[in-house]
Image (cartoon, rainbow, N blue to C red; front, side, top):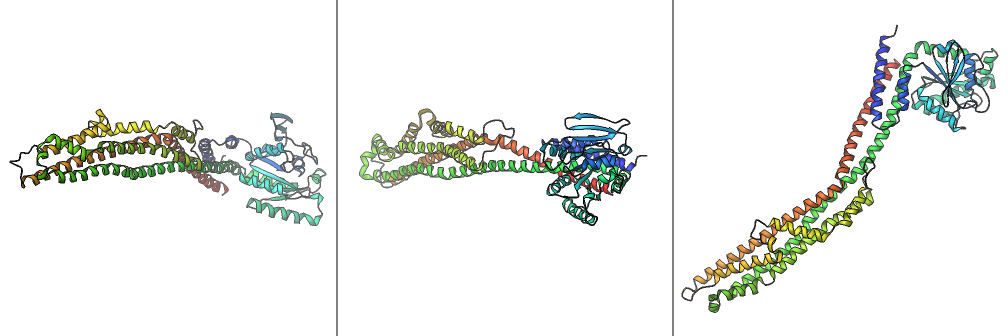
Length: 544
């Protein structure tokens, strides 16, 4: 009758293995060992014999089976994995390149399959690869070492590999007949100590002599065979369930490390994305600060008109110029010549300079981005398709036309001023529009100061007219300055919005893709950690 507790554990192990397969498949990892482990759950108990060539693996198996089945020699004689199973009639069959099935009518094989592997010390590299690939399938490993050269450095390395798969290991020291009686216990103690140091636990260690077993002498084989039979009788089911957990834990650890490396790589790319955003933020702050200096020059032109207007009022609105004040045409010409002068051209020049400076700013941003990518690396497209970001920025920089952008900015400015007194800028052009605005100011001032008759002109009226003229000038210039400032501010913000949009379009999709992939990998990493904990808890249950 099947133990209900083992049935429950078997179900949990299988579910966990399948969950591990699903999670690891999302990492792109090679899950061949784990898929094989799931299949082997329903297979026989596998006892794998491993060790360096000439350590006595084949002779040990011949001794266990009581017949000369496998070739023995001082040179590598096994160039393939030999899977030995029970059958009423003996025979052999090649299952695949490098794997042969041997059948024997031996009672021991009713409860387990034996696997003979090539040597592990990489004298022949193909042998090493065959053995390492088969290790994950083992339920119990008999690791043989020769008594005349026990526990070599390469054997220690191979045991570390076995430890990585969390396999149950039994150490067999063969060829005890080569030792003097007083040396046997010393060699066994040495192997036991070194194995415990390598594996982290002290494994069972047996000393045998396969040569003596063939002649019927006391060889130590009985103790080893008794141990194997006891394990099959008392522990086989739990070992069989624990074996694929070791494979799962190994693959989870490998997957976790691969995901960690990939996340770190993504973090490096996303750091560049963050730096590009920071670069854009610094660029916008710098442009706003420095554009304020550009617009200050525009305000300074208006202030110059204001100062000249004040002097003109002082010089013009006085009794000594009575006859001039009566002549409106002469007054207006005087105002336009002495106050307005070339102000509209100066304003046009300053505004054009401001717009040209603003147009060049985006080129500076692209150049700074290219410098950043050159020093920090260019975030990749995760699927590996499409040009590098540095190539895209270079192309954008090479195709950027500051003069065309400045013309676009003038259009932005015209649209910004279309609901103001300067709306004519869009129809007649910047210089002509400013000239019209200042001409209108001259007409307003003339309307206040000119056309007086001597009968009404006096000391009390003239100061009031002067103050009224000053208010008209201040109001007109304030409005001009305000509307120009607001128009330039709107143009600045419009250009920053446009350039920021164009700049982000260079990397936004790529960076969003990388961020999405990082989130996926972080979720996978968390799932791997969770599965690892569940595997560890199941292993604890199986060891009870």
